[in-house]
Image (tube, rainbow, N blue to C red; front, side):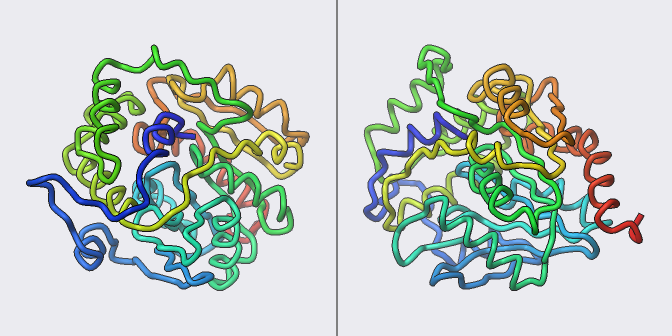
Length: 316
């Protein structure tokens, strides 16, 4: 669930950010202009602005991003899936362009309300729910709570039970970036995010300057909002015991944070339903949608088309 990211960011001050000399400070309007998409919309949910994108027509797929990412994490999946399906995705507050929350609380309960309220207001009564990394905590919980609405589920690279941190496993460059970051708790430098991304993405060519700038800008935006200290939530194992809908676990073979052996196979075994499977993607790390998104979607398409076709046989 982005463990190292969570540990690195957990101590960040809730005060307003003061960026170092030479670092750009984009205001909200400039951030929306730079990182919004042509189909970007905003919806107020419990006083919190929620940035979302709703594209395509047909059976509905809802995409939930992971730690410190945004709905942009799913750009490649959405571009392909919207040709046949209706694809809804949103920024989990306070990430991306969503937030702030009046209560300064961004726990799992808020994301559960966002999934429920957003889909109901958009008229999406039943849908396939797809999530990755820490986004799977609320997604799996929602599926367990609402089996009448979730027709199937895809999740992966998520913590299933306790997390075990081995600081020795960090690269020297990441350890150096974390140490430097600890000297200023009200902003993160581009190099901090570059090292986080390089640690979690096998295909280093995907860690572009534009991606690093995106993560820097949007996550420094978060630090300018009042917020409660983040809490690591360990509930997914219990929620998986209530999953009976078709489920696909999609995992990066080289995930350094939540391994296939320790988390993926445990998650598969916990699901009592019989329509379940695990696909492990070689050469792919923790941030699967960014690392090997196209290849992963190709592997997931038979499951997606089967589940959606069973729900909407007229759309076959």
